[in-house]
Image (tube, rainbow, N blue to C red; front, side):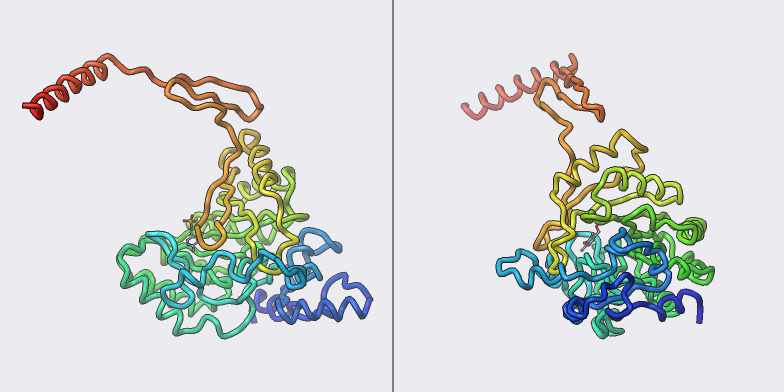
Amino acid sequence: MQEWQKHLSNSVVKVEDLPFLPDSIEYRERLQKVADIYPIRINSYFLNQIKSENDPMWKQVVPTLDELDDILEEESLLVSDPLNEEGDMPVPELVHRYPDRVLLMVNNQCPIICRFCTRKRKIGFPGIVTRETLRQGIEYIRSHPEIRDVILSGGDPLLVPDKELNRILSELRSIDHLEIIRIGTRVPGTLPQRVTPELCNILKKYHPLYFNMHFNHPDEITPEVENACNMLADTGIPLGSQTVLLKGVNDDSKVMKALMQKLLRIRVKPYYIYQADMASGTNHFRTNVQKGLDIISDLQGHTSGMGVPYYVIDAPGGGGKVRLLPNTVIEHNEKEVIIKNYEGKIFRYPQPTKSSSEKNRLSNEEINSNTDTCQIAV
Ligand SMILES: *Cc1c(COP(=O)(O)O)cnc(C)c1O
């Protein structure tokens, strides 16, 4: 057994094994109800990163009674499939929402189970993704020439065994119109030992291959994680990171800035910050949208532009990602644009006036259109 497999098989999956569990029997019984609905998984590498109760690592993976809030609340707006992914699946486990790219779920197991997961409805339960759903997904891509980009997701694609992952990637690469393959994964940050030389040897056969990883807090970037990202970057894979804005974990400009700067140091380009989705059982992680805008304002101009990700809301019901920007345009008209810089200073940018050749061309067009009118009149 490899080291990463040991970490996985030593995962905490039961309430009684949770770190910093209160003694109260009543509390444990109530927490068991949460775990019956939403499974627990904390692999032993990640468990070691938890230093105290309620720290950012603890909050991401340890269930709390808050997860039952919206079951108790009658008028909850939260739903099991907030992005209506199931409604955009032409074949099982493949989401085709945008014109030229699809998301393919290749398994539904993860190195840790995040309490705020947008796919809380299906993560950790066996038997959802099968060889047959995978076959249908790949066939769908093969028969749709407009698809030039596939995102492998799940679950976590890197928990698929090497041989199987190699088979999936090679089948995808046999499709001529498929230009790029992306892997959406939380493995490098939560089970870095999974990034082995053997894995890298497989991945490098299938370029152009991109990684969209998932990091939420600067403390996730340990020496082991740095090593895993180095191996992947040296394999020639462009590395990107996605972050979920989470109350009590990273809803703070200083924390976000530290995260983005640390990511750049390990050759990872911050790509998205997501506003938390409206998934049942995750309400306690949601922040006000103004918080996200404030964080972008505190990053933009204050640190490397490369470290400023796009802040997006994935529109409830399946509208796709919509980018939100803090207001920097104060006035925009034909004559000028008035803008505000990162220090709050105001600047005026005059629009170009028409050049003389443009003016000439315009007056000629006027003459022509007059002739037209005359002709019609005749
Ligand atoms: C996020 C997402 C994508 C990829 O979006 P990009 O903006 O291209 O990164 C594709 N399909 C689905 C269903 C998604 O949710």
